[in-house]
Amino acid sequence: MKYVFIDSIRGIAILLVILVHTSQSLVLPDGWLKNFSSYGQMGVQLFFVASAYTLCLSFSTRKSEKMAIAKFYVRRLFRIAPVYYLGIIGYFIFRFILNYLKFGQFIVPEQYSLLNIMANVIFINGVYSPANNNIVPGGWSIGTEMLFYLVFPFFMLMISRILTKKIFIISLPLVTVSISSIILIVSGYSVENNEFIYYSILNQSSVFTVGISLFLLHTHHSHIVSNIKSISLFFLFIGFSGISLYIGWINPVTQAFIVIPFFSAISFAFLIEAFKRINGNKGRLLQQIGQRSYSMYIIHFIFAHQVSGIINKYVLIGLIGVELSLIVSYLITVIATYSLAGISSRYVESYFIGVGKGVIDKFSKKSVNLTTKATGI
Image 1 (cartoon, rainbow, N blue to C red):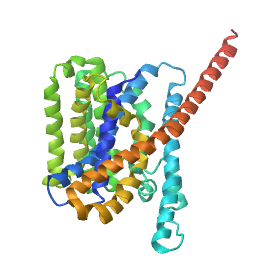
Image 2: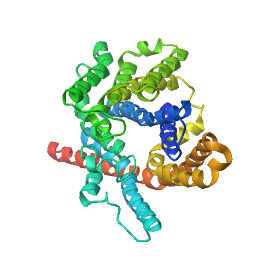
Image 3: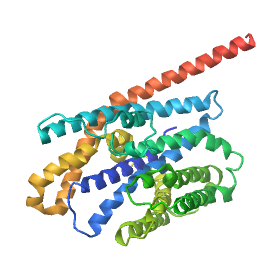
Image 4: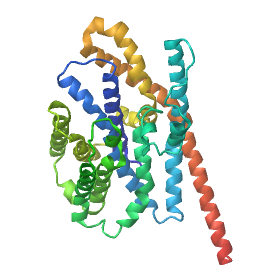
C-alpha cells in the first residue's frame, strides 16, 4: 500500500539535510539563520523515524509469508546497496580529480584504505570509527540504519506478545533513551555533535523506537493520536524542535546530543501525524522530492559543499551578501540534486529494486517446489 504522506516526510527530511550541508559552504554570522540551518542536520533523524514507521508497515503485512525474514533482508539490500556502492566509486573518482586539480598529481585520498572501503561495502562502518563517515559523505547514517535493519525483524518478533499494550508502546522510546543515556554516561563518553559516538546506533536507537511506537499507536490505539487536533500537532512539533534547537545550538548544554536525537524524533512523530491527515493530492512536488530522497542524499554533497562553495566564494557573496547567498546556493543545490537524482532513481534504484523482487520471486517458487516435493502433491 502506498502512503503518500511518507513521501512528503522524506521530502522534508532531505530538504533539511541539504540546508545544513549547503550552509557549511559559507561562514554564517551567529544568529537565527545559522542556528536554523544547523538544525537541518536533524533531517537524518526524520529519515530514521519515517524508516522505522514504514518498516513496521511492511513487516506487519508480510510477517506471515514463508521466509519472511530472508525476504526482508533482500528487499533492504537491493534498496540500499546499489546507490551506495555507486557513491563509494563516484566519490573516490571525484576526490581523486580534486586532488589532481589541487596538487597537480593523482593522489589516492588517504581514507581509502582497503579496510575502510570493505567496512562500507558490508555496512559495518557504523561500528568502525575510521570508516564511519569518510568514504561516502553522510555514510554514517546508512551504516547506522543498516544496523537497525539487521536487528529489526528479531526485535519485532521479540516484542510481538506485548506490542498491543498501551503502556509499553508509550514507554518504549523513553526506556530506550534512558538505557542508552545511562550506558553512554557511565562509560564516560562525551557525546559531541557529529562525532562517532553521536552517530552510533546506541545514541540513535531511541529515534528508531519513536517510529515503531508511532506505528503501534496507529495500529492498536489510534484514538490516542486521532484525538489530538491538527493545529496542536504542529505546535507540539515546533515545541519539541525548539527544545532541541535551544539546548544544542542557541544555548548549548553539556551532553545535550545524547537526548537531542530523541527530542527531535518526538517532534517529528507529531509532524508525521499531521501530514498523515493532509489530503494526498496536496504537495505533489514535495512527494516527488521524497521519492528521490535516497539518491538525493547520496548525491547532494557534491553540490552542497563543492559547487556551492565555488559559487559563493567567486560569485555570490560579494554581490548579494551571505544570507541571500545561502538562499540562492541552496536552491541551486536542491534543483541540481533533484535533477541528477531523477536519473539515479529511475535507472539504478528502480532497476535494482526490481532485481530484488525477482530474487524474492525465486525464493517463493523454490519454497513452493520444496513444499510440493515434501508433501508429494
